[in-house]
Image (cartoon, rainbow, N blue to C red; front, side, top):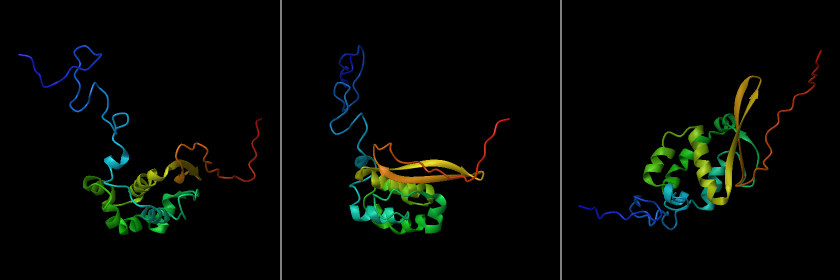
Length: 166
């Protein structure tokens, strides 16, 4: 007996279209088969005032402040504690399962993730770089416009270096 619960995928012999997908294409509103960020993480996007408060927890003035900051800076500023204080307000925007993942037991790593998520709506991204200084690895972060590959990486200036080949 033939199963009538699926429709063959057009253009593919013996293929099946998943339920809700017509002809193998993603549903409307879903780009490339992935739901937009708002539908994945947020019920609705956080308002700009709350986003600026999150950005200020990292020692930045606003979304156009392109200064670098490190995890050590975050520890000195008590960034995870400050984000935790904003947690009740942020929970109104996050879906419950995502709020449990990102807003519980905050540390510097989770704080960076929250920053990346809330600034994405405003065409910004947090880029990171690893630098070694005196044999110690330092993670540096910077908020830059999305799609901008023109950000200036940190250069640690060394003084009086002489390189000679004998």
